[in-house]
Image (cartoon, rainbow, N blue to C red; front, top):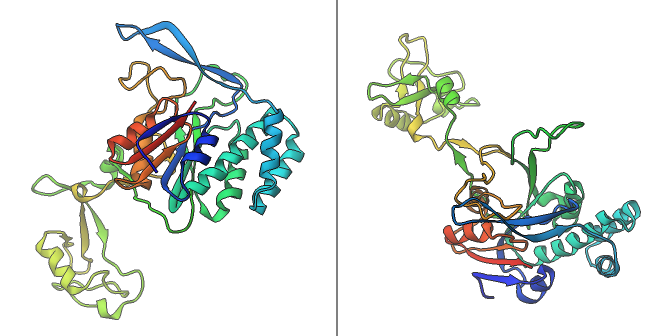
Length: 348
């Protein structure tokens, strides 16, 4: 299978005809959200300002028709019993509505995405509240509930002044699934906030290095770790480190000795040796693509490069194959190329 290619066409056709079974390490998609809006690309003039020139990028409006009926019948013939039951239940509830047309279009593509993922692969689905609840149910039926890992909430904008009769919509959702329990994942860390540093790393040594002090108490009684060290008694549970490790930490200046022998030795944790704060499922530190940003292309639903880099760094390795089946202006393949991943993009 060839990589570092952009396919122009219907992603369902390309997935079925061009992408091999279990050949992709990571899939990220940012499909239309069924927002019932037309989206336009805004071009820039020679000064870098927005031009009056624009062209329709895509129409995010869905209607039930012959194609939807064909796809629906294809879905209820799938060997996946959970998916069949899910689709039939949604058809009973939604009928032949525009939302059901969107649901069947997405469901058949999720089936193909699952097929092309390696057993160690990961899948990220970017959506908003318009249809996220339906997409979650569909993804559960295709990937299996045990393979759901996270609902990531990305704060994509600040509060809107036009939200008069409800709370402003300022977040998107990214569902993270894996194909199996054997998958790649690398924790991502960010710098501690100034407030966190001031609160927890209050101590400064003679060299100007910040540190906090942490207990060396074993979490449970450990007779083999119960020993006196330089006249200091351990906790009844014992120390959390062996005597050899204690001596090594002492040589490195990483022990804090209390003034009284009645106190207990504590460990010094230096700020400059810590990896930072592990990223959780609330991503409020990545800003949207601003109007004057250098990376801004004028594409209406463009996502920031930093967002895709984070996903790729967490769930893929160099030379892995990354697929974006709704690649739009190409941020995913851009990030993949920067990070030394092989990539495939599909759009029409």
